[in-house]
Image 1 (cartoon, rainbow, N blue to C red):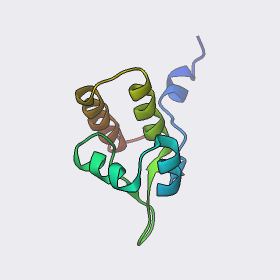
Image 2: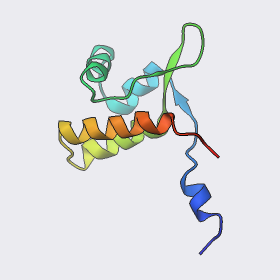
Image 3: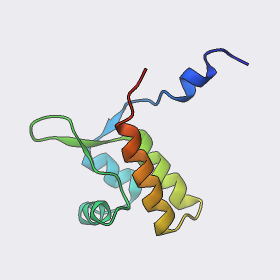
Image 4: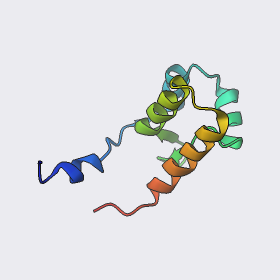
Length: 92
């Protein structure tokens, strides 16, 4: 077993996607994206500037994967809670 395996498993690429890319990645409209945020079905965006927000790419990918694998709305809501809580976890 690689001694750094646990370290690399906890590191996620930190690419931030802006709204037009999230629209393309999810296939959802702008209004549906914000409706899903309000309903707990998509993570809240992160502030990246005074008037700019974006979403961590890995969050969008995980939510898309869950949808593709057949997760229902309650399962997606739990995933969204987990993803947003992980943002607050201190990194080593």
